[in-house]
Structures are given as C-alpha cells and as structure tokens.
Image (cartoon, rainbow, N blue to C red; front, side, top):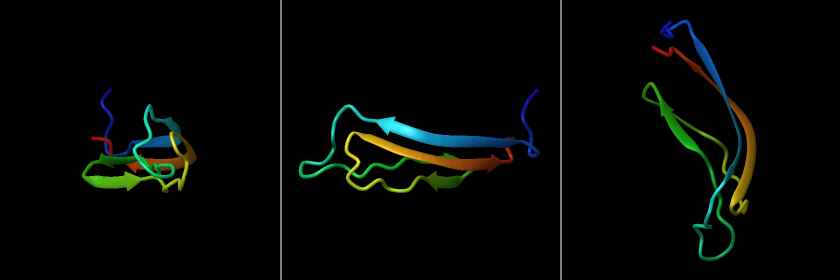
Length: 65
C-alpha cells in the first residue's frame, strides 16, 4: 500500500565517507542536507572531520503522501 499522511519515516544519519577532501587547507567540515515535502533538513557540521564523519543523528519525517 501507498504511504499516507499518517505515516512516519525515521531516518538516522550514521556516517559518511568522501573520496576527496574539498578543502585546500585543513580538513573539510562536512554535513548532510536533504529536502522532504518542501522542508529542508541538515545534520550538524562536523568541524575538521575530513573525509570521514560520524553523526548518528535521527530525523522524523511525517506525511509521506
């Protein structure tokens, strides 16, 4: 069945790995951004995490229709 407005999707951003460091000096400060139903979500910025960052942050998305 198709999800409806009574549904809840729980997403956990655990970690991320990048192939290349985007910063020329120092380590990059990664974050993850996404949009659901017109609303923007983002993790915290991991300062100087470089090419591998860990968040373990949870997002609850409602109204999946």
